[in-house]
Length: 436
Image: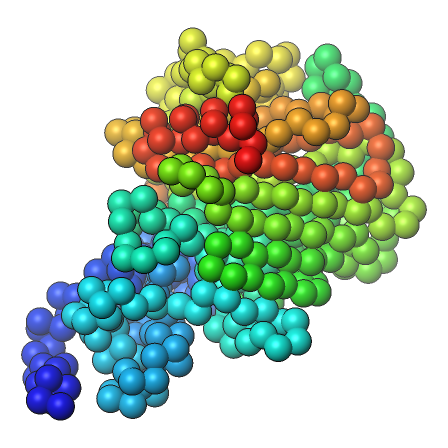
């Protein structure tokens, strides 16, 4: 009892001491905070300083979530003793308790299972977000977190490791998500995919361009379930361009929702690597014909991950010419240099790893070929850090592209790895060779 009252007194009287802790990476990450609270970016809050100010003045007392691994609302709802001691809506006290006691006691700051199926807590509706992790006890240097949100229809909008948020979720076209485009032809030798509709005939998991930066999505999250290490979503993606938008040609749809189905299982792969396994099935709705280009998936990432390297996943060998911001990208196909403006990206044969310049943080993906009729390629886009500010708007991008000669049902197996540059290279090589 004495410990409780002493702690309450410290909260009330020692505001200077308290303030030094509110930006602790166990409870706050500026990019996650802006990604998870789109009303802030809509108000023009884009920088780390903007996020810190809003968090300290408003966000804490409003019970907002500021990092994947902790949410004050979930923490109080999960631990009745903390809520009884400090109040069920005392979010500042919840943060302080977690930092001073809960973390060292091995308490976990979010619910580890739930869903919207009968008998399960509807966590993603109640709190807006679900989180899985490789954590089985106290945090270690290897612990990482993966989250998905209701506002992006279950798309992955956070991957967090070692105090770093990897995903940029600025609007409904970003995140780590699946999208596909219906076309008219594909040339396997030049990689030229053609479509008369541009990005209009383009189902997108997280939502449409009209959703912009906001809380709502035009995609429909039909159902989801999750436990501590995996989750599954069933989604009807929206078309990226709404049916009443001009696209230059009459559109073959009248509804903003595509009628296609995306069923995605995301799990933490077993073993020592920080490796995420995505097993996904896409089923086209009625009337869809012709070749299809899938982003399976695409990943919009923090813009300081802007040095790109391709590698051979069968051997781990790096491309002899690294793709980086200090030189023009070298692409092994004639179409590559025309696919992105200003020679900032292209489509290549080998997977790509995006890393910070010091290689402390990196992310990459590798698709496992499972259909001999399909063509598997990789794409990237990097940020010119000399001309673009590092803020919540700017992104780099990685993609696994799968080109199919027909529509119907397609299954994709892809691995995403995070860690240091060496970690990611080793993890993706392991996944490609073993694909557990």
